[in-house]
Image (tube, rainbow, N blue to C red; front, side, top):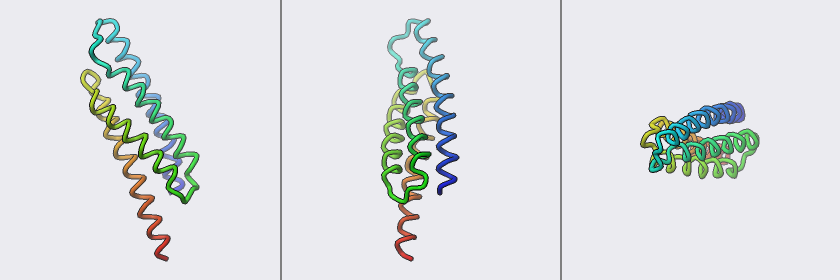
Length: 122
């Protein structure tokens, strides 16, 4: 689990950069089109910040046997998921990033719960 959290944390930081670049370009295009009703770019930036924060949390807590880092990651990824899937109108990639956030957040939390139950059973 330590190596997986490290790798996923690094990948989340890289994905955050991609999301940030995409969101800035979507926001700039909306500004040029004078399209003030779509907030996909803004929520994309929020998603990028949450991906970055979750990646840092996963890297920092990769050696921890407690659930604190996974709970924090789960909450941040669920917030990202909600923001992303509800605001992906023009910026359809945001929906992909939202579902990826859901899979990562829930996946790590469930995996850590199962690993803790197996270690307690021994």
